Image (spheres, helix red, strand yellow):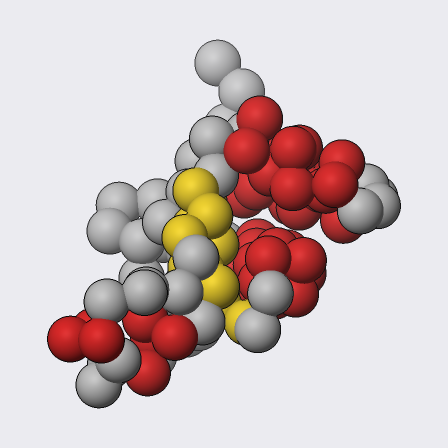
Length: 109
């Protein structure tokens, strides 16, 4: 998902209040997972929290509202990082290279 769409979705979700926040999150295709009731899952700490996932960003908290709020914070952070277009790694403005040489002037024909 493009970063501008991710940021727009995060802003739109954050603007909602109460149950509307959960519904807007699910309208965008987000999944909300409650804590597990199975005692065999209790040894994993992540299964004891509410989890929110949308567009590859995951967040967890004590309740669904806090999980969605944590997701919007993570989405804002993900949207502000510069990424390379080819492989998605963080982009370095210098990347160990000097300034580009200036183009030579070409005579008019």
